[in-house]
Length: 384
Image 1 (tube, rainbow, N blue to C red):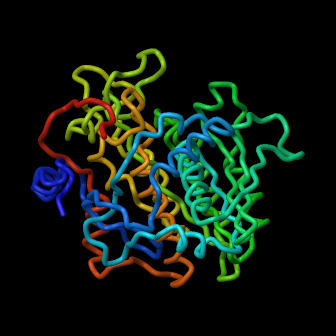
Image 2: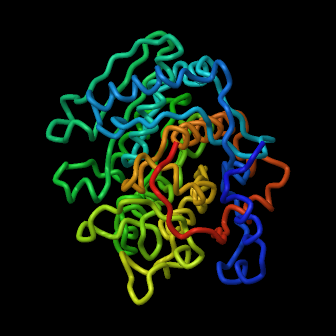
Image 3: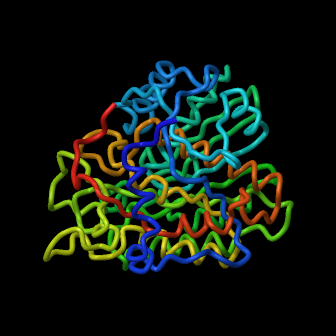
């Protein structure tokens, strides 16, 4: 099975003394549960019963009109993204996804990357033969924009998918997003033992001060409300995914600089926040600063973390379309869904599990390193 073009150079760079020293490579210890897919990530053909790409795309386009516009482009994909080593990670067909989520309320709190996950997951459940109802607003949620809330109910298997949106950029846009820290505290109280809560916060904040004031506050709220016994719901935190803008660290450089015509491969300098000579745009912080600030808060309270940032760093050409270096192609969104499902299964079956594969310690080190590699600094946008 062939690797993505960037992966071979990633491996060469990763374990060189200079990279290890510069990026302060270290293992993650302590009692926290980490659900980590093996690296590197590769593309493969989907199983015959995994999904109908054309039907899935039409469903996503429909939801983009009804609810949130992120899937309008829906670039076609015939490949799926997955770890090269699958000793602890596997894909599910649509029937298996339906069974895993049967008799569950699944709540997603976060930004527009989670919108993509919810849209595509709803479409996968529809492919399993389940019609659904869709509710955008409830009486107690009046006053928020339509795309800040959605509730899908699949009656056949009694599955509910609920999205509650929050983030600083939405606030700047006047959309009145939800306060995710407050929502976490309220939602956890309403969830049963089989129910699931997936949270993410970070991609809306480009400055360290904003991350500390917003996403770190959400992480503290999650840590404080983490169920203390097996009777509580499954709570998962998904890492913020990387961005690939032409900036100091790949993050969105700000509204004053316009949209780029193409996304940029992550250079060693960008990983360290030094991607632009003589300028800090938006700041000269590490490319992974968002997760570096939130993960320790979550680890201290043993909140399971779905670690995806590291694996997605090489995939600068898998964003939704040229100029949007934040949102992802359908292949990557499917990978995020599968990582969520694998994390859910692990937490449901093995309380307190430290790692999902035999190379636990090595994988923890691998996932904490900032990858660097040689190669072109810039390429075109998402290509299929």
